Amino acid sequence: MIGHYSMRQKVTTRQTGICGLIVTTILLAASASAQDATPARQGNGGGVPREKSYPKLVSGKWTGPRTADGQPDISGHWSNTISNHSNFTDPGAGAPGDRPANRPLGPRSERAPSRVTDPADGQVPFQPWAADKVKEFQAHFANPTRDDYIEPLARCAPAGVPKSFYWHGYEVAQYPGYVVLFFSSGTRIIHLDNTPHLPASISLWNGDSRGHWEGNTLVVDVTNVNGKALFGRTGEFAGPNAHYAERYIFQNDGKRFNYEVTITDPEVYTRPFTVTVPARKYTVADQPDGWNFETRVVERPGKSPVLDRDERICTENNGGFGGVSVVGKY
Amino acid sequence: MNIHSSRAGTKIVCTAGVLLASLLLSSVAVAVEKIPRLSNGKPDFSGIWQTTSVADFDLEPHSGRKDAPPSAGIVEGGVIPYLPKALEQKKKNFAERDKLDPRLKCFTLGVPRSVYYPEAFQIFQRPDDLRIVHEFGHSVRTVYTNGTWHPEDSQDLWLGDSRGKWEGDTLVVDSTNFIDETWFDRAGNFHSDALHVIERWTYLDANTIDYKATIEDKQVFSRPWNIEVILYRHREKNFQLIENYCFTADYDEFYPPKKDAK
Image (cartoon, rainbow over all chains, first blue to last red; front, side, top):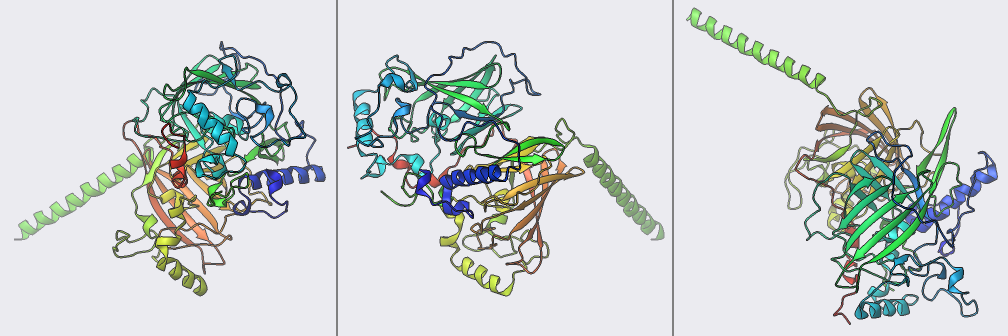
């Protein structure tokens, strides 16, 4: 993806889009380390993380710090630990058509588990017609011949539910009555009051979220999702009437959380299923890496450093990824 | 006659006195009315806001026309001080506004247009920053109030790089590093990448913000110029921002797969 763009010092968001932001952040990180102006930060080396297993987190008491309005304080920068959105059920395997024939995948057990954690086989319980649609999408993903074979994220669409949690890193910010998720592609405002959901006729990429805290767990009910975002470059999907029950289970040291969502849609699946996405926190102690942690560390004399987060703009830059232009066809 | 006129005079004096007193009282009331504040004592602009102004149609005074309601405009002095060459460009933009306005592509509106565009925005505020989430395009703008200033090596940004500081109860936001592709309104008023905007956000009362901006761009204008609009808090029951990723409208029909489709 990154290699698709040429590296240059002077870049504008218009010229480079999201991938440009990545390149820019890498350049900034590189120049910062070259100048050695800041103390070395503990980093993860950049790139997409490849954790092959992750701890199970259980709901229970929250013993960590709290915000002024009483929420568990989990604000900050987060990113998934397994892999990106290239492959939904085999996260380490890459996107359809990615792998050259001379570099076969090793045994499945050597890669991260499926994001589908229920049912136990790790597969989405699609009805036959829906499974056929996914197969068709995958067969054409690398060389799309129709509009519906293009992953909509490549056209700058919001990554949606649940894909936003395994796209780039993201920021979680808390306010009285709200948890707000600032993703690389799209923003979700989770209302913590008991106001009703939007009318069912309103259909949204990121849906309508109502949540509350139960100890260490943020429980969110998501409706009004238009189902257009797909779950990854492997094309799994939900229908426009699906219901999403989310649980964000935080580790009490504040360093990790597991995102779990149970998706119910009798029009597309044979039964509800659950997706789990592990995430870890990034702080000023980490090196910005252009993917999970796309920030700029700003030193302040006499004060602790702070993080700037770059503007996220995609469509305007005509910079969808994967060689697919936003305005182009295929 | 004399008595009569004297009584009338008393009446006028009296009425004026009452008016003056009530004016004084009302200004006192404004001064003491509580505005929302953060824990650090600074004004808290959290909430959902929108102007009733029609500024987005044309910042300058204009009669009603097919594509814009009439307005006295929001530019102090009435006229945007274009340099001669830039004025020619503005006229070209105006002539083709039904095709060239970036709003029509649902592009991020820029600053200050995103503030007076006739669609709601929500401010999420903490002591160190304000996040402005716009319904239109669901664009997110960050205003840092953590004592930092513009980075020297910033990219050109659609919403600029915004750093705020407090002057009393007024939030003063300095924004630079803009891209040159946004417009100020539907009438083709424009700027270059040298745009510099200084905004002043001040509560008039708990539900009303006075928004002023000084716009500077030496490549386009002969001097800085000022605008002012009033922003009102949305107080309708259960009012909320509804994402409007309108730039997806050209392709959203292709998703998700449909059961009966070939």
